[in-house]
Length: 410
Image 1 (cartoon, rainbow, N blue to C red):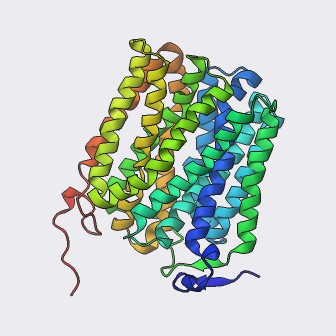
Image 2: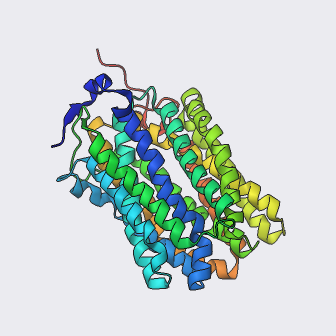
Image 3: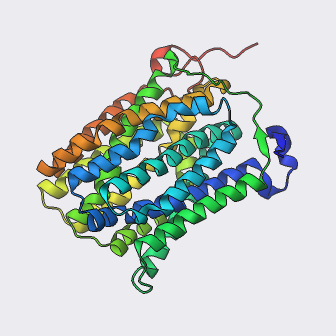
């Protein structure tokens, strides 16, 4: 029988059974299954199903549909606690990943991608909600940075094993998918059995929440989904299609990137805490404009492999500052709005993610560089929106257009 513990009493538990430890365990478990899927994806679909740019666009459009439907989390949490839903979603992600290589053709790949994506996106929606409920505002930037580093470390282990052992052991897609997905599912099942159910002090609304005063957060989420999708779909695909990267070579690039992220992610949290969400996001979006313009230069100016690989690493560093968007919302939100707004925000984030991959895949067939120039324009739009974030956002002062900071209550 489940044991329910108020969040305030969780400090009396052993360290390994506290809420923050569970957040770290989940942050470690999810990237194992997802990173195995992602590390092998481009090579697997090209070798197993002869995908081209249009096909990879379709695959990622299907992958993002569950993100677009993440608002359904609001319905599910009417009947299931967020903590349980998050762990069940991890099990779904792990099992679907484990089975991926069993169906090496278009239809099978699309179906399993959809199932694993339901697990991934529902987990991410619930995980963001739990993070913002369980971590105090004062500690949130630094702690989110450490959670990001934990996820990067898990991904590092996955890529390191693939890079080092792929050729010597003659690993196959099926073996790696089965092991990676199985580990994610096993960790989630352990967490279901080992941890009590934690109760946050503020009950979450279980209705659809769309508030006018959160408009800037919604807009930033929309633009984030648009430009992120271009990177997710086409940056790695470019390395395989244009430069002929094999599995272990592409994994080596991911590995370099992750070593950097493990070191940098906690620093990003400190940067957000020190300089505030507005400055952090302005720096992120300005950097992404330059990175995407440079990606376009790889095609139009003939820049080579070293430049493309360096841009890939920089891209990930800038995206790490997106934790500032979470803490911005945490500062302006009513406490009971966190769970439903996380679901709504995920859906908004994925509107462009569902709509863009197929047409951009077709544009890729004509002009790959133009896809990245379009992403630069999206990053520039995000930069303009970030200028509207106040230096000290609070409820009632969500944007620079909202007037002066409200006076503290007497």
